[in-house]
Image (cartoon, rainbow, N blue to C red; front, side):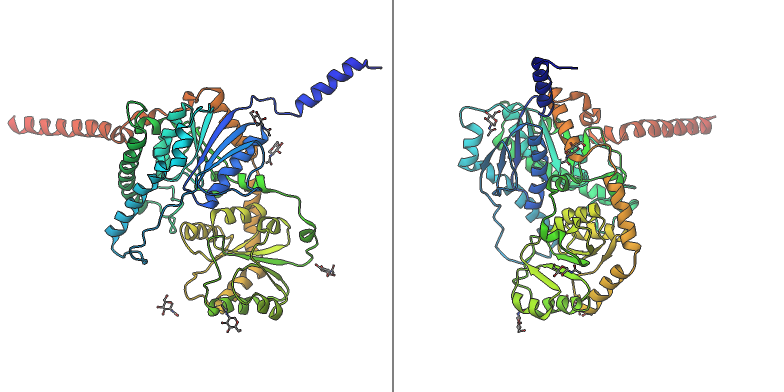
Length: 500
Ligand SMILES: *[C@@H]1O[C@H](CO)[C@@H](O)[C@H](O)[C@H]1NC(C)=O
Ligand SMILES: *[C@@H]1O[C@H](CO)[C@@H](O)[C@H](O)[C@H]1NC(C)=O
Ligand SMILES: *[C@@H]1O[C@H](CO)[C@@H](O)[C@H](O)[C@H]1NC(C)=O
Ligand SMILES: *[C@@H]1O[C@H](CO)[C@@H](O)[C@H](O)[C@H]1NC(C)=O
Ligand SMILES: *[C@@H]1O[C@H](CO)[C@@H](O)[C@H](O)[C@H]1NC(C)=O
């Protein structure tokens, strides 16, 4: 059958229309201020997914962006700011209450950023742009919800880990401390001790909320703006960089709390370069993360690693190293490859990595999980210990303490992981679970963000528990009424009995 040119054209037109995003393009504000670089990378991955769907973004950050951090139709507003460190004395005080006081002082000062002239220009500068949605990089910064009130747009937050007590309280999600260990707890406690810790954390949260309320009222005063708690209750959606059904723990979550674990990996997948495809030996990757530097490390620590590594000549060891004696190390040990930067993700993706020695940052553990590479953990700070304890408990590898690390210990642990297949097996299985999803995280995140915009903030997702006080939320009023009533009846009956 012959087609007329007209129908051919319409066919072509249909084809080209189908290959472009048909969704309406929205203007989205990303507010990612005063966060760590590793958190920012997760936020930007969500933005990159939105750009791929044809949306237009305006990003406000306090950290500079590199060209390859984000590509596409983006307006970037850089407001350089770093919270000054208290330098009164360098060591952290041992007094617990002093430390607490310091923490809250720091929180209070985190709002100073809102006094910068650059910020005021962004917020008040004419003409005010229209935003369909605000994305907030969430990090103890609830007062920034005032910005969504200012632009009169719905707001969604991005949390870089499993939902914590703070996020649960924000969304009205039930806390089940009995059986849901917290991401920062290196012991991964459950039961009574976890419950008691939950109460302690609640107290901290109440205090932190007060501080943040103060910052909010200063910069977004009523009645010009809705109140702080009203804005907290207005958050429409939480995206968590976590994948509960494979990483655990299993916990109840509201429908407007969506897991997008792995989005950073999805957005960073590249074709393997020629150098990486040419790797023809088994390799070990060793990196302690971007916040660690070898420049100040003592010679003894460096030689602990070189001594241990010298016993594995059958592996090429890719060591991220920025310290002294680089040339000496590579001459003495030709199988140790040293560089300030290795394409870690691409190396892990190459299928040649037999062991990943890592500090256990959330991003690195996710990469190892995604590509099924067993780990040897050397935690340095923050949540890394907790991440690695969980990793070890699941038999994805081993964790060593970084205090008094000896080359013998290191050698033994490496040999155990490289020699036995149990770790590789366990993490390959976990990797299959991690990847087995109905939809990738990029599509999932953009679907829900577009959903919020399509339905004007999607009040239908709103949990009624957000309107309750904590007494009502825990049904304490109900229990008091029922048990109080029962006790009253018993007392009355006894009284009557003794009177008769
Ligand atoms: C970016 O988006 C805006 C608004 O949709 C449009 O006016 C502008 O031409 C776009 N720029 C590029 C480089 O695509
Ligand atoms: C996510 O999945 C969709 C559909 O399978 C695909 O078109 C898209 O490229 C994927 N995105 C990423 C970042 O992998
Ligand atoms: C392995 O790769 C190296 C370079 O990376 C090359 O010199 C060597 O010949 C290769 N060996 C084999 C057996 O392919
Ligand atoms: C560099 O190598 C020299 C000679 O082996 C050694 O004395 C020195 O301590 C090394 N420096 C560091 C920082 O490892
Ligand atoms: C380990 O290091 C601590 C100091 O960090 C030191 O007090 C202790 O004696 C060391 N233990 C051993 C077995 O070397």
